[in-house]
Length: 395
Image (tube, rainbow, N blue to C red; front, side, top):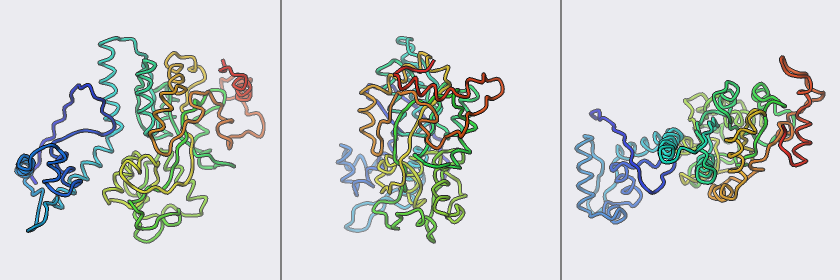
């Protein structure tokens, strides 16, 4: 196929656009034919004539130099294997870019808002990929006049960004674990310090196995992931979902290398994992229920986890952080969460101490002060809990 240039553009319209909803006439046509089973039904669904849709398909065949539809005598037209592969490849590419598309859209909305008003606060948040946070960004903008400059990355990378001052708030998630939770403890404790960092309650969500519709391979347990021929799709290093997967496999005594695909190129988001499974590139991955349902896939729940936002203790009184907490505790946010399967509010907007929110984070004796830290800071977490219980935010 001859190489074709790709041109991107955007418009301002009254209606909102979310996620990876980027419209292109070629892929809109291909989607309609695949979804409705024939050119005639696709034309009816699109409110167009058969002749118009047929002519458009022939135009795109000329542009691409490949056949897009095929048919047999007495049978409705079907997408060719090339068209089907092209459609799934575009879906996967668009899904991978969803966080960046949403960030660009939000930034353009902020630019427009500043030009019209100029009174919005801006809060930079770097966070692990999550389907609820773009909804929170919308609520904060509409209800609190707060623009959340949201950038998605792995949980550990988000916490490093907070430590390096590249954001005011970070977002990460951790399963509700008991005991030592060795892998999470090793990964998180160097990046979070009781007395210096404060958690802000956000949501709980369910992580599980994302599998093809009707689960044809009967993948119901972690042990099933090592079955011969099962193609596993991993998440990127530095993501808490990969850390969770390693933790769960360790608990079951399963070596990660037994999973076919463990070391193959990973995906960077729950939606990208779901898109790959829906396209047939992989059979199973670990992800959230909302992502599975977005692509009509089956979901086998494994564990509940908490999604926290975190900032330095000194940032709790920052005007943008106060607006963020107000947005989290408001009814509009609760209503938005109701639209996402597998999500529930969890002390949304409340300030939480590390040792209270993470029960496996314990100190057998008062922790020593770190270099440059007042000795009394070592006991700060316990004091914070008492203050929170009294209904006041720690100073």
